[in-house]
Structure formats: structure tokens, C-alpha cells
Length: 186
Image 1: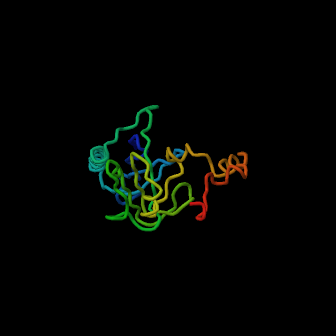
Image 2 (image 1 turned 30 degrees about the horizontal axis):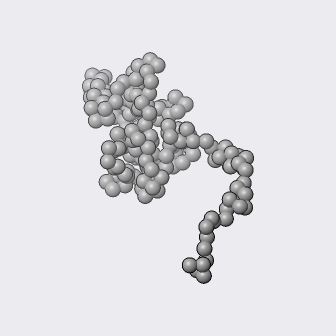
Image 3 (image 1 turned 45 degrees about the vertical axis):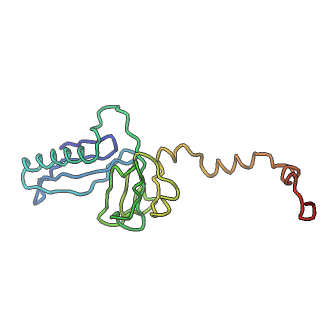
């Protein structure tokens, strides 16, 4: 029936299926990089008025908690750094909270599921305004989303290897330490 999408690629939908026992539903969704929507956390209602109220409440609550705005037209999207919890559901003590970079969004899935077009399985997802360090990712066993702004800027491994192969090797003279004295020269 209608949807609202926020500048972080998340949103809510209100739908109707007249054949269902509770024919109205509000869903939360995540918009993937190719524009598809992944729906979860459905709330079912027996009448349209209750569904409309729930839809409006979920939108208002999410805006307040996440500090996001509704996306309109070609509005530029805020860049978030997304990380997947591949080993366990997201819970207290299972993700980093660096000073000045607390997660802006935490999503737990009902089960471990395929994400990023089927390239990995995860229990949940976290979004940050700034990138995490390699150590933070390793310490909490998080995997970065391939589309993160900092990852897109990096050349691929193939490109890095190709570049390294084109660099001239240092000469043998450059490798020798200078002014090296042995113990007998003191």
C-alpha cells in the first residue's frame, strides 16, 4: 500500500493481503545495493486503521532513535559503515563502541541468514558513522559490508598485486645497513 525509506537505506512498508487471517501488515525493510528490499519484523493487524497507526508509530520511533530522515527524490544518501556479526547474534559485549562512534543502528535477524547477495551468513548487522579499525573488526569477529565507503576507495587485491609487481626492486646496495660497526670496532 505504501512505503517510507530513510537516508540509511532502511524503511517501513504497509501492505494488505485480503486472503490472510490478519490482512494488514507493517514490515521493516533494508534496501540492498541493487534496490531490492529485504523485509523482516512484520506486525500483523486485523484492520486498516490499526495498521496505519502502527505504520506511523514505527516510522516516528525509528526516526527518533536513529536520527535519520526520510529519503525524497534524488536526495543524497548518508554514508554509513555496515558490519555483519557472522558468529553470534548482536548483544551486549558483542560489538565495539569506540568513543564518538557508537553504532547508529543495530539489527538482529531472527536466524543466521545470507546477506550481501548470498556472499556471507550473518546473525545481525551494525551501522556506524565512521569506519571501524581492522583490530575492532577482528576483536568482535565482524565482517565489513563490501559497499562501505572506505572499502570502495581501496583498490582490489588484484590491482594491488599488479601495482606491486610493476615497482622496481630495490638495489642490493640500498638494502645494506650504513655505518654498521662490529663489536671489535669500538
